[in-house]
Length: 284
Image (cartoon, rainbow, N blue to C red; front, side):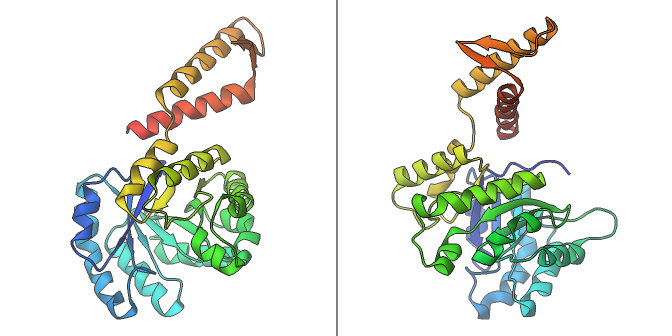
């Protein structure tokens, strides 16, 4: 499967028709058509019916399209079927607490030929966090793991801010990296839509933890996410210098190089290559 750019994923209530065209015009890497929290129960069926048109519109605008389903068994199968029928690129599983939930959902969307959407699992409870390593490696269709900070903090009885979320954030990043999938999230509140500077700082600090993207509930959050999870020109140029210096050293039979008074060995050049790969992905 081709890696997806997932710096910014914008939630849109699937039952509000006017929002999909607006989302298509944003710089979000992905648009999430939400069937879960943003849709009242009486509008769930209507939201499913509106998925195909919204998916088609967004994909014609070259957006990656995700559908967040409900984890309520009474709604889940219908949601999964609607996401498949709409040809969504990603299915987002909320409130994941066990690897079985991932495996069962993956089985429900597979066509037997390797086609169909990939999965993102949202960790939103203490039990989910404790099971994060097993969840992250539950199925090959799982492409990313996210910490849902609002629900998680509700379950924990704590405030969604850096000091309370930095440790669970590191656990999510570790679980995702160990499983070879993408860590998504940030150590702060998704509800922060008025203070752009505060949200930007949270995203930038979270990128240094190893996260590669995060979710937005308002278009104003997209630019800070894209900036935080993309290397800037100086970082790209420095990464290129590191790779060049290391490659020159290996041509001379050396296992390390020196640049700007610092030693460059495999871990350092590995981080530099990751910066270059992120820049290339962001430009696609």
